[in-house]
Length: 364
Image (cartoon, rainbow, N blue to C red; front, side, top):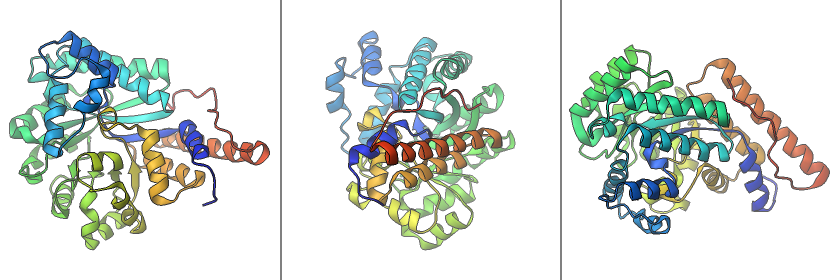
């Protein structure tokens, strides 16, 4: 890696076309939108002042994070709330030049609060179409089971995924706490979703050991693993992930915020990459963790010692791991290559340059 100022990489990352594969719907609510929703629903414990949200989003541990997350979910009480939230999340993504995202939606969190299931589907689909039309961002959905709510939530999530099946839905996941929530109990629901053509993308190994990742692979037939932080504790697991090209959806800042990793400098992403495991970089619940995808790419550059070419390769990893058709992947990979070549050419001619190329339209 050649020596250069961090601001050079910051400018490069800002314009780099990117895909994000592990980012949560409600967890991506910007402070402005959270505060606006809190003002509309004054019975909520969530602060109404955007500045107070920073302190509110300081987590003692993973259990406290879930508690805070649920309190924000409670702010979404009708389809218009869902539509507003979804489009605002898309707007924040487009600002970072994210070109494609698989947004994890937990529909059970809405329907158990009384929002009609069809209203949920219509709200997210309306926002998805608007995001592609107005922002040039392609959105797809992962419906995930909130594991802490048990089998009833799994049954309802699988029903909505398989029977209502919105156009943008591509995958089926499992989130929430891992401790005390064994993966194998959800096998029938993943089997049903997979039979309907959905991809399997459960969280595993974030706050538990490698055995949870093995369960996700063997019982839930995972095609990608959400987090997978503990994978480096098991050399045989790393070999398996590398051999079968099973990507890990790595979220560095999130892992520190939830105490899954003690400090950023000790994040195991280096060992994952050294073992040949495909790695993608993601933001998870960005406003809650005081981050965004651009920031996570800057973190990855520091942890992995990447220059512009390495960052472009990292962006390509996410595209290759995405549930996009081959022509759309090829177009986005070509866009990344073109951006890198243009950046390097401008820098060689004029010194550092960070302007974002104009004229990017949807990738499909």
